[in-house]
Structure formats: C-alpha cells, structure tokens
Image: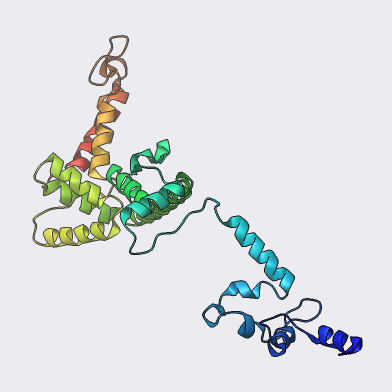
Length: 293
C-alpha cells in the first residue's frame, strides 16, 4: 500500500464503535456554531421527557451545558419539599414550620384597636387563631388578614351608623309632620303596659320606628271609636319616656323640691316662676302617663 493510500485510509477512518451513519445523524441536528436544528429533541431527548419545559429554555449546546451546571450547583442546597395529599401530618407540620408558622396558635399576635374591643367576640378571635394555624400562616400573613378584617368591621359599623342616622332623620321628619299620630302611639303604650319596665321596652321599640307608630295610632283610632280611650291631651310630638325625663329635670332644679345652696325654696323667692315650672312639670307627667277621662 502506498503512503498516499495509507494517508487516505487514515483520514477516512473513524472511532471504533461509531459508524459513519451515526456520526452523520448527530451532525444533522447540530450546526457548526452549536445551534440545535429542528428535530433535535426527538433525536437526543428520551420520549418520556420531551414535554418537560426545561428543554425550551435553551437552543444550543452551550445553553444546555449551562443549564446542567446550574442544576448541579443547586443539588445539596437547603430547600422545602411540599407534601402531597397523602403525606402524614408530621410532614405538613415540618413544611409549615419551614414557612414560618409558629408551633402553637396562641403565639399569633392579633391586635385589636381600643375602640373596637367591644365589637370583637373572644370566641371568634380564638377560632380565627385556630384557622390561621391550621392553614399554616406565618405572622406576616396573619397581620395582613387581620388588618383587612379591621377595615371590614369599620366599614360595616360606618354603614350601620349611616343607616341609623337616616332612620333618625326620617322619624324626625315624620314626627314633625304627624305629632297627633306620635302622641296617640305613646299614649297607647303608656295606658296598656304591664309595668314601668314593660313600658320602657315598648317605647324603645317605638323610638324611630315609623311603621310601629303608625300601627299603634291605627289601634288608638279603634279604641277611640269604642270609647276605650278619650282625647284628653293635645298632640305633643314627645315620647312618654322623654316627657318623664323632662318632669324629673324640673323637680331636680335647686329650690324646687329641695332648698338651693342658700337654703331657700323657689316658691318663696320667686312664686311666679315656681308656678310656671310646676305647671310645666305636671304637663310632662300627663304626657308620660296619660289617663282617660
């Protein structure tokens, strides 16, 4: 064999165990600059792994090697493994602990503003702590949720206050326009209550309740038709409870029933004023507890 022929054989030779067909097949999917050509996944990647998104993060040999190096560096670093549905409670406890959940629910700080302490129910607060702990919340998450809960409660209280104000205004307008109806509603309560406590409870229901006042007024009309009650008082527009309060205020004035700081009585020092206040007090007592006849 000539030297030229030997050189040709040497240049055309290939590594043992690798056929020219295999070598040509691999070169078909990698260009000279290292870029992968279409179909490279089907050639190099096992079929069961081709759907993995990691193979979409690079498009050349250099990118693949860089990804391999990054994954290698992450091996052995501390990490948190998320338990599955079938994992035992101990694994979930370890997971929640790594995420910052305290060992016991009582450790959670759940601050309540001073002006809202009467609103919060202690049993519900305790239940909230239990739920937060069960869900694995750390203190930071609890703070965010508790802050939102306070905003929700304040918004609810503001809405209630606005509704009460609207009700008060509506009742004030109604009573100003219908003093006769309010008078008879109050009188019906006063004359048909079992005792003072019963009367007070009914007057609380009547207060700012237009529908109830209208209902009582209608009943009073039936009573008047059958002479059960008679019209002995003029419309006043004041509730029986308020009338009683005004009567007591007059009696508590210094010098009216008891001597003033100088030991004097109003009926002795200013008889006309005393007579005026006495009539005013009697009028309030009649409004507070009107009697038929």
